[in-house]
Image (cartoon, one colour):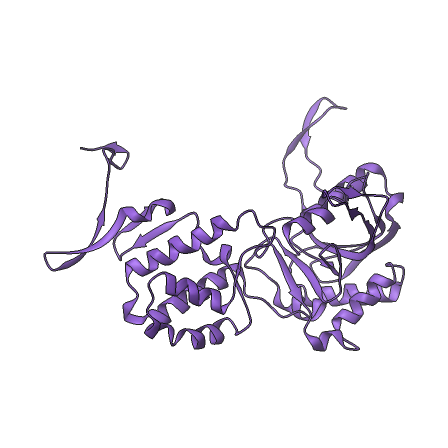
Length: 372
C-alpha cells in the first residue's frame, strides 16, 4: 500500500464515511488472562465513544511507510489450507460474528504478543464501497466499482492514571484524585487484506508498529504468518556494513560523502511519488558505482548484498539515508555538518598527517562565543 491508499482508508473513520459494521474487543491483564470481551454493532455505540474508537483506528494507520507502516506478503505456504491467510480470511468472512473464531484469534494474540502489562485488543469489520474515478480524477460516489471487505486490529496498552490531587467542583475542595484505567493509543495493529490499487489484495497485510525497532517477531510470524522484515534501524546498519565490506581499506571519506549526497538527491527527486523509494540490489550497485566505487570492488558486492539483505529483497531509501545529519567522528572529536553542505568538509594530507579541512565563512562560534 502507498500513502494515498492508506489515507483513503483512514478517511473512512469518520461519522460521515463510516463503513464499520461490527466491533469486538478483549481486555487482557498482565498475567495474560482475558478479563472482558465485548461484541457490538459499531453504529450502536454512543457518539462520543465512537469518536474515541475512530481516533484509535486512525492511529493504527498512521506514521511513516517502511517504518511504522510495513507492507508484508504471505509466503506461499501460509496461503495453503491451514495457513494464517486462510484463518484471517475466515475471520473476515465471518464478519466477526463467529465466537469460536474470535476466541481463537484472541488466544493467538495473547500467546504471541509480548507485553508485561494490561492491554486491549480491538477488532473491527468494515465494508468500503470503493468509488469509481472519472477521467479528471474526481471520485464518482454513485459508481462504485468494487467492495473492499476488511478487518482492522488495534492493540492498545491500558494504563493506570497517575496519582495526584484534583479539584472537586461539587465539594469546592482539593482532593485525592481517583485513579482509573485508561486505554491509550495503539502500539501494534494490522489491516487485512491490504488495499492495493484501490482493490482487495489477499496476498498482503499492512502491519503497524508505534516503535519501528520493536516489531514483535513472534506476533508477525504466528498471527500474521508473514516473513519478518528488517527494521528501519537494521536496514541502515546492514547498508553501512555492505559499504564497509565492499570497499574494505578503500572506504575513504570522499566515497562515503558521495554516497550520502547521491542517496539524498534520489530521495529529493522521489518525494512527490506516492510509493516510498525502494532500492533493489541493482539500484544499490548503481548508487555505489555512481559514487566512485570501482568495478573491482563491486565484484564482491552481489555476494555481500545477498548474504545480508537477500537477493530479491529491497531497502527503503528513507531508512538507509541520513537526510537530517552528516556526522564525522574520531575518538576525540565529533563534527556535525548540515547534510546539504557536506562539501564544506574535505580530507587533506598536511605535514604528513591526514586532516579534516573545514571551510568557514565570516561567522565562527566556539561554545556560543563568536571568535575572529
